[in-house]
Image (cartoon, rainbow, N blue to C red; front, side):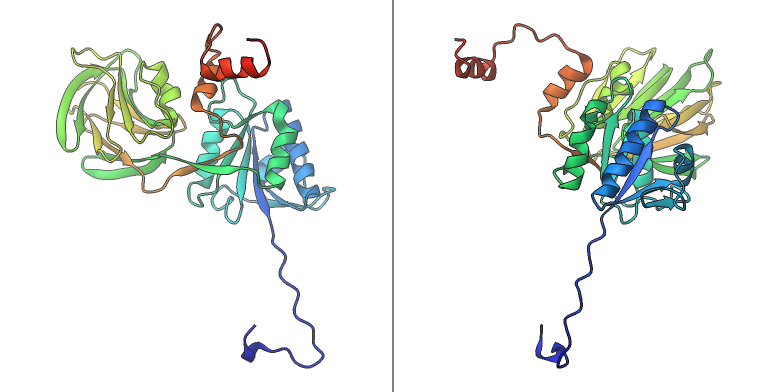
Length: 330
């Protein structure tokens, strides 16, 4: 306190403003299990003094009305701005729900913490049986943000920008009709690389390397690697191998104008734009990143083994031998 800020005689200092902690809770409310877990989350977080914010439609699906609920909640009327002033966005669902959360938090940069109720759930940090531990970690702030590279995606038709968006997993250029291929030219750093008649092209981040990229035959890339991955889908060409390029590379896919096949651009499998012959898609690393909340500093190798149920029986690496010695079994 400076000399100019002395209190008047007999007055007390003003009470410090209490910190308001706020968490956005998002849920796959079409599933009974997700609704049950979400309601438990809301009760536990509000009991710990954390303000819970819900989207209006999800609150209605959960049967929560701020006027009648037995604990306080906030309602966001729409997704735009819903994550503002929130320290975290908790998602109860599968990878699709987490990708939706990435859309909602893109403008605010709010970290996303996923609780898996899907099949693989590569983006999720916890499984549904870990709910109590997740709640404790949120209350005690025992989590750390991890930056994930995202893509800036632009689509042009007749030279005119028609869409500008982002992707956390991948942007894919695909044929629009099952019976027709599309013909494309791939360009990297303003130079043409190859031309393919194909079913499509996947342009993926390291985060998305275990998603569509993996299904299309692309490499698995560790999340901390800064790179972009390009994978042609069912290409009729001699040189049609997956490519890994520098993170600051400018990648473009042009749909050949004289082809009969139209295409479609998908971003994270959620946002689509029709691509007529002659369309151009430009992809580069986005200026901002998506933050995923991490509860454990476990190696990505362990996540791969667990999510894909990889066979590792018989492994006797140094860590395993050390553990066996400590247990007296060697």
